[in-house]
Each structure stands twice: as C-alpha cells, then as structure tokens.
Length: 354
Image (cartoon, rainbow, N blue to C red; front, side):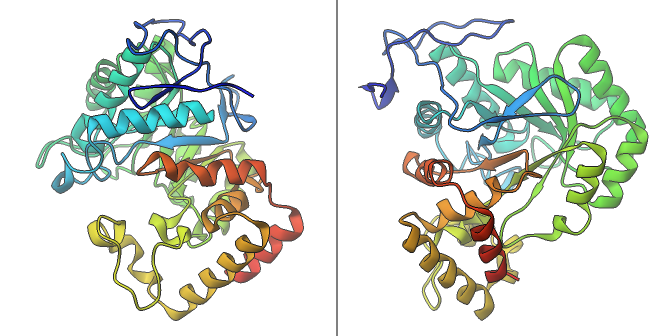
C-alpha cells in the first residue's frame, strides 16, 4: 500500500512524476516529488488512433463556472478548490481530465494548466469547442474558429497537444466535413491525437461518420437518462466509435441528495441549472431511487457507487466522466471499481429503472 504524505492539503507520494513527452513543468513546490497516478481501472482504445483512455475521467465543468453557461462564469469551484480536487483525483488514480474551452469562460482550462505546471505531471486531456467564451461572443464549428479556439485552449492548458478534441455540439450552419477538415489538420499538425463529437443524436452521428472519422462521442448517459440505448450505442458498436458518458449521476439525482418532499440542497444542480432534470420530479423516479438505495445498502456501498458500477459493467461504455464538487465525492468511484457489478446485478438494476 502506498504511503500518502500531506502538504498544504495536497496528497503527495514519494515517487517520480509523470511528464509530458512534449512539455515538462516544475514540480509542485510543497512536495519533494509528485506521485505517478496509478490507474484504478483498465484503459480502453479509442478507435484506431492508438490512444488508450481510462474508464473514468475527471469532469472539470464546475471549475470557475457551471458548464458553459455565461451567466455562471466565475461561480462554481474556485481555483484553489479545483486544485484540491485534481490532487485528490490524481491520488485516487484518475489520470484523465475532461474540460472545454467555454467551461467557466476559460477558467477551467486555466485551472488545469496551473495544476499541470505546479505539479509537474501530465494527465491525459479532453477538451471541446463550440460554445461562446463570453456573453454574445461567436460560437460554432467553422474551421477558422476551431483553429483559433484550439490554440487558445493549448495556451491555457500549457501543453502542446490534447489527447481528445471534441465538437461540443452540432452546428447546423457549418458542413460537418469542413469541421472535420480542421480537426484532421490539427491531428496532422500534432496538436490533437484524436477527435470526436459531443451532444450528437444518432442521425447527426451517422452523418458525421459519413463525412469523416470521429473516433468518439460524449453524450449524457445514466440510469435516469438512457435515451442513447436505442440508437446511439448500437451505432457506436457497429462503427467502432468510443462512447463516453457524461452526467453519469444525473446531476446528483443518483447520489441520494434529492429527497421526496424535501427542499433541494443549496448549491445543487436543482438550485442552479434545474432545466435538464425537471422531468425527474415524479413519484416513479423517487420510488426507483429508493429501491436502488436499498440495493446499494445491501452491498455495503453508496447509491452513487452502484450507479457508476452499473455503467462500468457495460462494455459498450468506453469512459465515464464524473463531475465531483469536493474530494469526498470521489469515493463512489473507488466503490464502483472495487465492487464491480455482476451481470445479474446489472439486469436487476435495469429492471428498477425500466
């Protein structure tokens, strides 16, 4: 077992840090050395790119904001809180960080860049582009904008290359072949290793596959949002597209924080951006959550750990992207990995939410 040493709330292990082949950074001044992140879960290949990514990534959409919503820029986690969370994730073995240029209006990428520079280690990185960086600014997937936004992302992150670059939404005003032409140029130039899409439906993904070679799609998927099971996941299986699931805990609904007849906790998604989750306010949802919580208790883990374990038990899911608000919110990840869901349990869980 590794021995953790704590300095200024940052866990350190006495071992040599991992460095980027293209860039090195100074070591974190509070530690003699920074730990090698030891993955807790197996990696999966992303198409034919040669890129292998871990089953779990740290979602950084709450660093300096609440996703890409301009009205929340400057809110969410402070830089110090983001650094502490990245420390905890790295110590747990989560070595892939997922962000976007517009998360917090660039604040998320800045925080990750500061973490990389100060710790002297290099996580795998996913970033995305589409949304405006400031209220009223341009958005979309024009090739010239992609080139500009990618360069700005690299500068904020302090790296020369990102592992995975995603179109953060579908742009009906730009032919997808033009967008992918810009992505292919970035691959050829070495600034990205692989590219894909996010928030695409089945028809949009099919059109994208006809126009280019996206190797991954990142969509919302959880026990409470299984829309992609009908068409997107089967299409990914047929075409060899890596499926990345964001919002695996449905904005906190699968953690047990929302209770029937009780007010929403202050600072929760239901008090900040409730629109995507209003449809869950039903008696059927609360009944299903109660059954899931009882099943989790019988296994000796949290409801969130069981919900994540259900996703990890699905071979069609390449990666899940978790978005914890505090270091202790990472515990369900360890539970899901250390207590894998069996095929029989997976079927029982799905029956609860049918």
